[in-house]
Length: 437
Image (cartoon, rainbow, N blue to C red):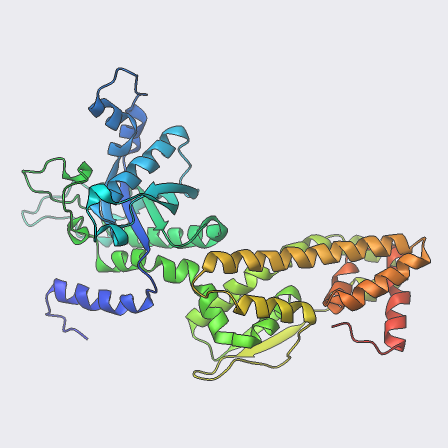
């Protein structure tokens, strides 16, 4: 590791090289702006006779000052204008993430051809307004002359952080991941007062001039830690899906089953990153919110119909997962079913870098399972009055591929008549020694 006496540029270079190991592609970018809410609110709508300069000001782009980015100047300027136009229509509250599709020049493809000839392509964009408070307790605000600086205690500064992808068809599927990651940037900004970038005197409008070759490293005096945090957003926000599939391989079917089973997972011998990846993957498939909704009425039912206590109680299942470095993942209980096996086979056939498709398919797994549950509920409701519907319920449990899990959940909001039908059905399945897989 670099000695403490090494110059700052060497330390920054070392840290950037270390963080670059977490990058998989070059089609995802970031931009961080300071946001002047007062200047933005003072801008009036443009008129048909307005001059070009007036139109540029009216779109609100001058209320955004670039602080850090890995975009080229041309692409960044176009992005800033697109965001400003969106803000002028509806400025979101602080912390509310916004998704939009924008037509921009991909910096990675436009470098080999002239800028004027570079074609615009669609990019998926997430941006969010955030607020940072400069806490004077963290800084020595006394200058060398013994005078206090102009920064006031707990001064609030607004920023706009933007994450951009030319690779992923939709970023909106990762809303919660983006919101969480954006909030993680605030503590880093809290510890560092922002210094406006110093531009050459001959280019007073350089920050808004798309032809000016701005080096992203010279845009601000932000710490390397913040730059690295912004650069690593694809690795943290998106690629946990790819990593989790790589951890488990064909064993991903057991993880899918555990998620749909709403099991209590205990993860052993895993790094903090691995455990976080697995739990976030589980959340993509878990129906825990549905289970909580169904269980909310349990207490009332148990009081009114105590004879069905055992049916209404959802017994918790604990599954232990062990990750040994360089070895396959092991489960203490390898639950699975045809439904999860088929889903895992299709999941493993996807391009591992296409996280949008993976996330969409995981959502489909969850919705399909809920659809199967609702279909069984309809059959059981009909079986209260129709014996043939009871047979259809039995046939459906055999062929759906997840009958054992459906029986676990269908009891939670069933009425006394439905539970009586279920009792008969389960007794028959047990006597026939059938396995609903």
